[in-house]
Length: 283
Ligand code: AMP
Image (tube, rainbow, N blue to C red):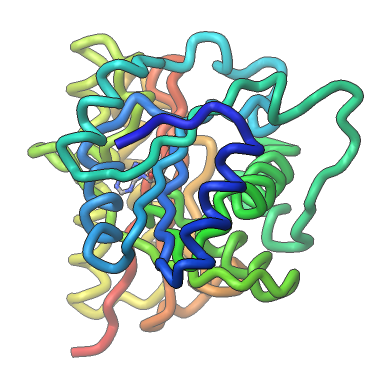
């Protein structure tokens, strides 16, 4: 395994492998790797010849008020974890190289980015689509994989790839959870022990909602209200949004069907956590 820090070197390396007919698989991350990231790496490993993982805490997807500075980082640990998974290349650039001043060019996907997390984090998806575009131009992957934990992100990136004719196949991997159901996230590290216990309400509520749908409930407002009331009972929680949406358009649905997803964002103290579940209405 090698670590590449220079954009030009990454491009030249990928170009060389491409010219040899090698298939490049790519897992973009912000580092501080956990089982969620590792599951994506494990899914990609058998599908490609050269597996590239990027580690870059992307400043353009954080608002000035957000946790860019605090965001956890531990490159040495990440390096060991990647080595254990047989990663071939870690691409680990610095911000100055990725966004040399005066930086001026951004990628924006319309409509899909105005809702859900996009509504409460203006500019966030512009940062995501910009960095992923840049990384695709640098790493030149044939295949890239993203986690369903960031459900809206995956929908937005799939749209971007189609609209801008990127020759990259986008895959997604399922949400990896802690034993008590909390979706794994680098941000879980911010939670106090007490908040960590409270955070289990998120997936518990989503699971209960899934059961309600399985039992025949199709009214999205009933489901939303159940989740909101349930989460609001827990002292340190503050709901950002709870939405039942179509998996492709991200538009709210009234009548739940097989293409519906419940997505939510909840603050536990000052930590914002996201989660989602698909709804199975086929019996
Ligand atoms: P991040 O480092 O948070 O930007 O995440 C990098 C990639 O890992 C993204 O595609 C995320 O969706 C994915 N990811 C993060 N947490 C999880 C999880 N718990 N399960 C599956 N994928 C995840």
